[in-house]
Length: 129
Image (cartoon, rainbow, N blue to C red; front, top):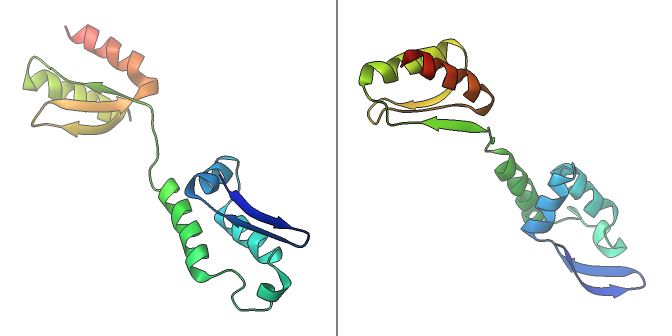
């Protein structure tokens, strides 16, 4: 959350936190919109300076946005403990051929498929038994 430290008739002094920025991102506000807001609402004495918002502040806001967007969460399902290497490879081939496969570890015989295809994969495993 952003903390308001002082509020005067023509000035608000506050702190921007990672949590407050992430909250803004979750509500669809972009880093560029936040930076634009800070520039547009800068105190007149600061607004005349170039840059009106310090580069370390704008860089940090952009970094937090790129950090948040770096990882994509995909619901998935892990399959492991296959009775044989052959069965594991058949499952990998099936998942790969149908576009379900997200990751596989041949050495440990584990694979991860997209979560929405778990029923199809479960049915394939049932038929293979």
